[in-house]
Amino acid sequence: MKVEDRDDLFVSLVVGTADRSVEVIRLLDSFADLQDRDFEVILVDQNEHVEFKLISEKYGEKYPLKYLRFPEKNASKARNFGAAAAAGEWIGFPDDDCVYTLDTLRELKKSIKETSADIITGAILDFNNKLLSNTYRYSCILSIFNVVGRVSEPCFFLKKNVFKELGGFDVTFGPGSQNYAGEGMELGVKAVKMNKKLFFNSEMQVLHPNKMEDLKTVDYSVVYKYSFANGLAIVSHFKMYAYYFFIKDCAFFLPRIVLRPRPYKGKFLFIRIRGLYDGIIMRRPARFKYVEAGVQ
Image (cartoon, rainbow, N blue to C red; front, side):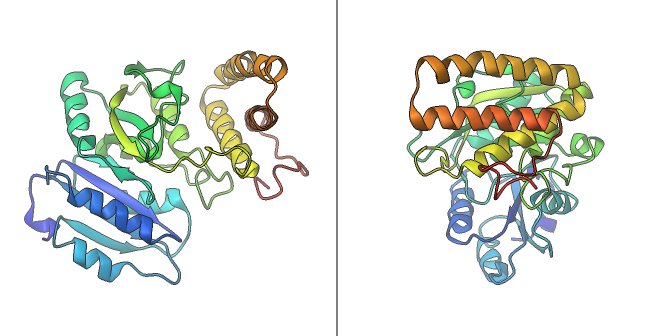
C-alpha cells in the first residue's frame, strides 16, 4: 500500500529507531491492529548493523509506511527528519519500544473534536496496564503550572503546521544529544510559551516499559539525566517558574525522604531533585557519582 495513493491521511506516526529490533516489530504489529487506517508510519532507521528495510516492506502491505535511513543516532534529529516527510494533518512520535492500544488514535480524534487543541498528550502505562505517573489520572487543559509530567513523547500529538511553527524538536535535547532526554518537555513548554492550546487526555493511552519499576537495579545516571534535561527545558523558556517548580518539588519530596526513609526510594528522590536543580541552574557537574555515565 503506497502512501501516495491516499488522500485522507489523518496522522503521521514518526518512529525513530536505534539499537532495537524485537520492540520495533511489536510496535509495528500494534499499528496493524488499529481499525482506523487513516494514518501512515514513517520509520526512521538509525541503526548501524540492523536494517529494517525488508521488515518495512512487509508492514507496508498492511498500512502506509515510509522507510527512511538517517545516519546519526540522535532521536530529535531523526524525528525532525521524519516529520519533514509527513503527509498527515497531525504528527505523533511513538517510541520504538512502546505499543499503541486499540483506542489510542480514537481518543486522539475525540480530543481534537471536543477541545480544538493544537497539541494533545496522553497517559503512559506499563505492560500490566499500570499508570507510570499519578499525573496521568485526570484530563485537563495544560498550562505552565501543570504541563510538567504530562508531556511524554510516546503519547504526544500535534498539528503538523504547529510542529513547523515551533521549529520541531530542539536537537540539543533527547537521546543521542548533549542533554540525553527532555525533548518532549522542551517542545511542550515552548508551545505553552507561544500560547498554543495543549490538552491532556487521560484516556488516550500508550503502553511503554517501566524502566523505574525496580529501584534496586535502576540506572541512577538515567534518573539524573532525565531530571537534568527537564530542569533545563523548563528554565530555557520560563526562568522564574523553573525555580517555583523546584521549590514545589522539594517541598513535596524532601519530607518523604526524611520522615519516611526507604533506602532506594530516598536515593531515587534525592537524585531526581539534584538533577532538576543542576538543570535549572544549567550546571554540568565535573564529578557526581550518579552521573558518571550521564551528562558531561
